[in-house]
Amino acid sequence: MTVEDPGASGTTAPTPEEVGAKYDQFGDMLAMLLGSTALHIGMYAPHGESPSVTTLIAMADLAQDRQTEFLVDTIGLAPHEHLLDIGCGTGGPAVRLAERTGARVTGINVSKSQLARCQDRLTAQGAAPGLAERVDFAYGNAMRLEYADAAFDAAWSIDCIPHLSDRSAGLREALRVLRPGGRFLFTEFALRGTPTDEEVAAFTRMWSCPPLTPFAALIGELQQAGFRVESVRDMTANAALCGEVMCVLYEDRRGEIEERFGKEALAYTDPLMAPYRSFCRNHMDYYLLVVRSPEA
Image 1 (spheres, rainbow, N blue to C red):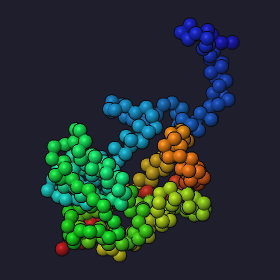
Image 2 (cartoon, rainbow, N blue to C red; image 1 turned 60 degrees about the horizontal axis):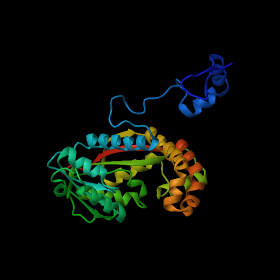
Image 3 (spheres, rainbow, N blue to C red; image 1 turned 135 degrees about the horizontal axis):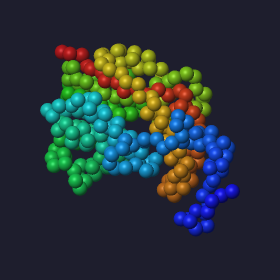
Image 4 (cartoon, rainbow, N blue to C red; image 1 turned 90 degrees about the horizontal axis):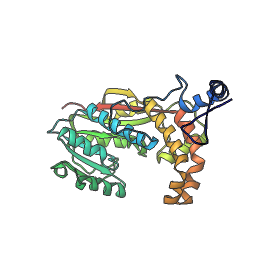
């Protein structure tokens, strides 16, 4: 039996028995989609924060902004210092770092389209006064930096190191351009367990990167390069959740992707999503490291 709902024409409100029966039948499935610790809406965005987040893509944007703020806090750049942003993406973190610290930032990238977006940030309406005098962007290869020895007080590299075909060369170059005692903040993936060949191929194609290595291999390369490890933070949970969100958004926005990039993009990506998601869940670790060059 159901009760008529006077506030919604043509609909009925469920009885308590029907609500109970629905949860008896589909409660476990709901837990698979909503979360199983409480079966209520979670606090994806802390209350009172602005802007409010109501979509997955907005949550992803907020997560990136939070990560940027955390990295700015972690690097601790002083106003008189000059930082090299290795693999600067579209320039958002570099600009935010300069805005918050008053320091100089030089960003390099191998993507010409991303460099154009970096320049747009410097001239955008609302950009901080004097920002263009303290931030510059240029084409640059992380494994062969075109800067003098000891040219920078600090450096960071957010999700760029995984792309390098010769990680050791990239680490040596970062060390070379840092002044004595200079700090280098970077993020890197590490391999966990034994993935299938299909999972490895999916991850490397999605990320345009060589196969991952265990975390111990990275520590060995840092020591060989001459860096001293100052801190290591395991951020695997964030990377795993990011992989989940990516896969859900891919399915949700499939029509938009086809319209913008064509069927060829879907044909390339479709076979990768399931093994990529499995790799992110079961075989990928993610670390934030702060290391220092030797003192003079």
